[in-house]
Image 1 (cartoon, rainbow, N blue to C red):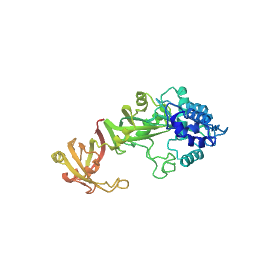
Image 2 (image 1 turned 180 degrees about the vertical axis):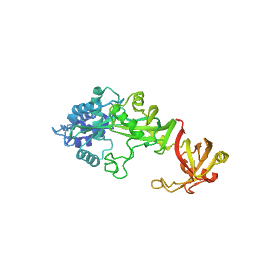
Image 3 (image 1 turned 30 degrees about the vertical axis):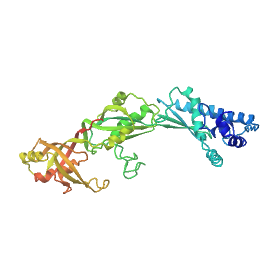
Image 4 (image 1 turned 90 degrees about the vertical axis):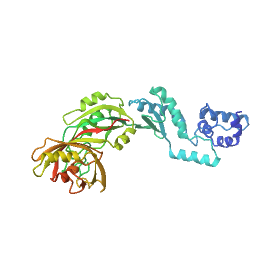
Length: 407
């Protein structure tokens, strides 16, 4: 007789007397002994009891698990069929157990003082997974599975939990009439109304939709989410090497799509996409939390006659200059009213006429460039207008560079 069985013979006799099946009997000592299934462990306990003159055969209907282990093959096939519907490099199988069964098991543990029992859910996960593995032909992954099939043992239904895919890259936005992301209608909040002509959004399309809709079609996913490294105003263009972003696709049926084809199908006159590549989930927070300096080009209109040399001198005066910017009036309805310290690294002026000029400048992340130029009624100090002595406003703005490098 195994030593661990002999040491637990009293509790084993009482548990076997309840009529538990071999799976459930063995699971009560599931953390004792290695290299065996709970089913085998239960049979060994029952044989030891018979040798000890205390035979206790299992009942035809287990009072604990309700013979759920008789359905392992059915569960495994159902899980394998669902997993094989999607593309993945690995998988994991989980279960949802009848709450009454889990509660009965817990009561037995507490009443018997069992410290080495294994939960029924853990055994079901393992045994179903072992039977399903030859049907799926891909490895099991416990830490970061790409797809999890959750078997509801009450009905043999299988729910799928498919890990999102994340595609990073940079985008150019050539239009001054589309936003970066979907902009829900401010009246109906996406439901559709007269204000938005039933579309549920304020703009016909967005950078997000231009690439996201194509990615959904290619992956068979459910929804797309767009995580940009900051955002430009709707009326601003994003030029140069583009703005870094991560596109998230939920519940993709196909995980490995041709990213060159995604770019080819997404690029148009409104936006284009650069250096598409797969990343892990962690990239979302890294991109959203990054503070990258930016280079802008703006066309400025002046409310008065300009002195060309004065414009050049004011531009040069902002070399490594610190400014204080209170939350602009145009965004104060959605941003905290704070004063933020920002740095203007350099400014260059050209194309100067009697009443307009262009500026190219590099600033800290988060600088409000339009307000730096105009002063925003004294909320941005010092401002270009203040030093020039002429009120100026930005007519057009282009982002030329986001100075961020992958770690």
